Length: 446
Ligand code: ATP
Ligand code: MG
Image (tube, rainbow, N blue to C red; front, top):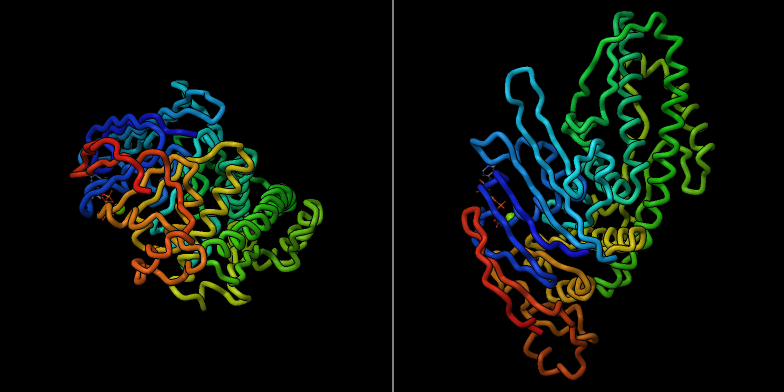
């Protein structure tokens, strides 16, 4: 896949921008707070309608404006020319709702799920460290976004899940209070501007509906919920297993080490990756029944995909608690490369890569390894100093871990070096206060 052009209107600190880009590597450089990350964020937004930095679209609208628009043209590996555009308008008056409209090849997409998997980009950003260091919701979102991008059915199942769990929770509260309950049925509308990846942090809007006998409804909701949950868990277990395999391979490649990374899915007790969907459904149903009294007391559903987590272990111990900052960074990089491998395998397309200021944080060896991995892709990267990006293109195979300090001796050993072939061309752009000045093409620095 290759991005051909991007157009922004009122997006973050950009008034208007139109940029045509060929294949190759695109380096956006400039001082802090000029709009480098904003540009990558806009490209990433076209993959799943959610920014990698925030679930709140209103933050993306340029201050003082009432809408933003992002549109891209791209060409798939099969040679098809396609486009995706997103438009978001703030609520025009009190009581009205903001609206989001998505276009695919200039036609309006009515369901958010239909935009999943149209355009593929993977972002490597400093925020990714939260996947390892942050709370469980960061890891759940990472997994949900990854699966949804290759499986629209999964995304719809997540939407069903949030709808049903919202209804069930209202019923639980109603059972406790013996009053009236609310039901939400509107989650797949694009005008509901949060994506399912953010439902756990947001309120579901409501319509009122009265159940004559709430207690009698609970069994029905439990069965519906268990059926949806079993599909979600089956898919999450399957992808976690692949992710673990690919990420552990990438970590070994990146660090040339024998460190063993494993990823486990942490769900309800008794859950196992080899279980059938039906067995998972039964297991979850039993769990709901056992905790029913407690859940009525709390007025919420205490177990399920909205509570689960991923556990990263490095050499058998919890990486979140025991790994060093550098080890955590390497784990994140391995996860991202695993994501790249998974997406490429399932879609048959080579995703576009967005590297937000990551090169400066990597040592020489990891930077070189990363360059090897990404060289077949169209790459957009940001930095404050271009010297950080291509310091040296040679990887000394026999001495990968020695870092930057002995680069001179590395050069002298260049006969033993394996030459890293960077993309054919590198293009530079200066980013300054929400404008981008293309500086043209330079020959690859390898
Ligand atoms: P760094 O090198 O520090 O990462 P950067 O070039 O990547 O910097 P960005 O995050 O792309 O910086 O842009 C930050 C700028 O965008 C800041 O000046 C910020 O005030 C501005 N900005 C962010 N959101 C908006 C918005 N909604 N409206 C106007 N300006 C915004
Ligand atoms: Mg930035």
